[in-house]
Image (tube, rainbow, N blue to C red; front, side, top):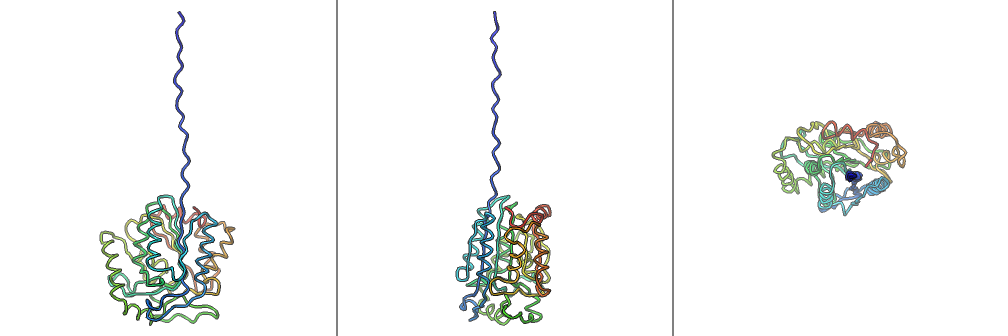
Length: 313
């Protein structure tokens, strides 16, 4: 009797699902003026900051990055914080976030004693300043593995504003720095508000060992900036507009830093990594303005980030 032959059941072949494409978002802030009501009557006129924000947003679009643009009156504290928090919530490991700022840098009194010059650096938003402590806290909310690129075309130097006045700008250019007398007046008039912002950050970071001033201080290359200590989850690359003893210049169409960045990028023809990108930008600016580059996060993650072509998703 012939035996019945049964075939072995076919093995199921599971198709490998392609890895999801990283998500990329950006936030571009450009302020040609601030509200006099929030700055003691000073309106901080500039000319090129809105152009900077729009041009960086256009660059982002060419790379498949979804941009949000906040210009002058829309560049409020609430709008900027909301944009940062929305991005931090939406992005996960492998994703990319680009943050650009063009406008005045300022200062408020440091109440926690972590600044050697007793001043906290700020970005001058339309209806009030964003303190460096706050920006650090917002950056720390991003998930591990997220790449964050911050480009700051402004002044953030305690030594410049506190120890000696900046040199006069070249013809046709304006300094992106809130005058020291205005900074003092604004802080005096709104002291309780800015002190409370710092207290709120201290409460949220009380268990952390990281210096909450270092992130934005490094963005602006503030003097006496200290290295971050402890775990910083995202990989952050920060390129500033100038050194701590210099000032970033405004122009007619672009700020000096942003204009040189766009020139070197050359519509995407630039083929190097972030380190060479920074070096080329710096080489093209006058000796009075030399951009800084810093990284925050694990050494492996930041090294991999710096090795990428700029704006790679």
